[in-house]
Image 1 (cartoon, rainbow, N blue to C red):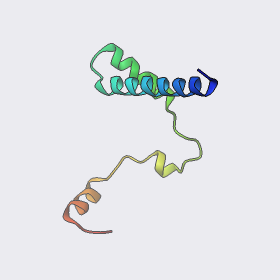
Image 2: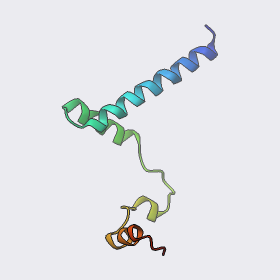
Image 3: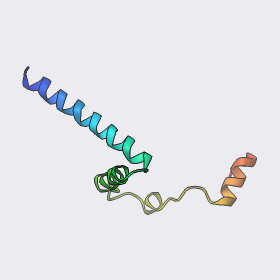
Image 4: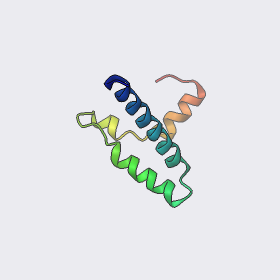
Length: 74
């Protein structure tokens, strides 16, 4: 096995572990699930330099959602 194959296997294993951790964190039932969520929160940090409105986005406000559901455009 050459160095290229080793690096590839390492990336694959990392992706598998990351997926398993994310799957575990979404359950949020047991203590291990909660620890997985904490680990993901620490690993995934907001990117510095993003616009403030993107970082503070909380989704639609109720009036905006009602307009969307009625099919109105802004």
